[in-house]
Image 1: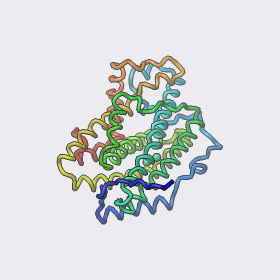
Image 2: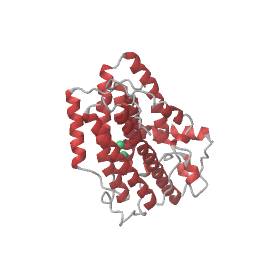
Image 3: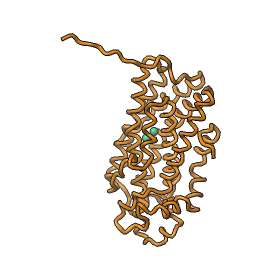
Image 4: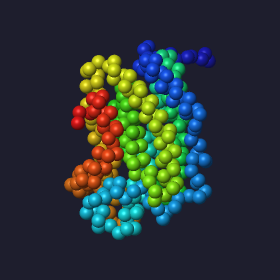
Length: 309
Ligand SMILES: [Fe+2]
Ligand SMILES: [Fe+2]
C-alpha cells in the first residue's frame, strides 16, 4: 500500500513577531531556565515531610477570615480550613499546568514553519517546566493528605469561557494564562512566605515561584508586544473577553463553594448558599486582601486596557 502524506495546513504568517529588545528578553529567559531547573526530588525535603503543627498559610488569608463563619469555628476547624484552601490552590495549579503544555506545544505545531526559534524554544521550555510542577504538586497533595479538587470545568460559565480560547489568536491563550498564573503566584507568595508556616509548603511555593516569575515575564513580553501594534477593535474585543476572566479569578481567590464538600465537619456555608457566598467574597477582609496581593496584576491590566475598572 502506498504511503500517503497528508498536507499539514498551517497559517502562513507568524502570529508573534517580537522586536529586537524583546527577542533578547526571551533569550535571557531561555538561558536562565537551562541554567537553573527545578528537580522534583531536590526541590524540598520530601523525606522530612510536612510539619503539621504549623499551618500551610497565614490565617488572615483564609477565604472566610474576618466573617462570622470563621468566628464560629474551633481552632482545629480553622486549621483544617487553611489546609483545604491550600489543597484547592495546589489542585488548580495541577489542572492549569496540565493544560499548558498541550496548548503551547499545540502552538509550536500549528505555527511550526513561521514561529521564531526563540519563541518556539521558550514555549517548549515552559511546557517542560509545567509538567514537572504538576508532578511536584501531586506529590505534595499526597504528603499533605489532601484530596485533588474537582476540575475547574465544573465551575458554571468558566468552561464555556475557556473553550473559546482554542479558536483565538495565540496571544489570547498566552494572556489568559498569564492572568491565571499571575493571580495564583501573587496569592501563593502573599500567604506562605512568612515565619510560622510549614517549611515544606513555604519552600515549595518559593521554588515554584522562581520558575513562574520567568513564565510571567515571557507572557508579559509577548502580550505587550502585541498590544502595541494591535488594531483598536481587536484590543476592545480582548478587553471584553478578559474583563469576564478577571471576574472569575477574583471569585476563585475569595471563595470556592466546593470547600464544604471536603470539610470533615458541618461547614457553615453550603454550595448553594449564594447570599452567603457573595457576602464572603465581598467581605472587608477579602477586599483588603485583593487590594494588597493583586495590585501588580490589576495595575498591568488597567494600563493595557485589559480591564476597565
Ligand atoms: Fe508552574
Ligand atoms: Fe507557569
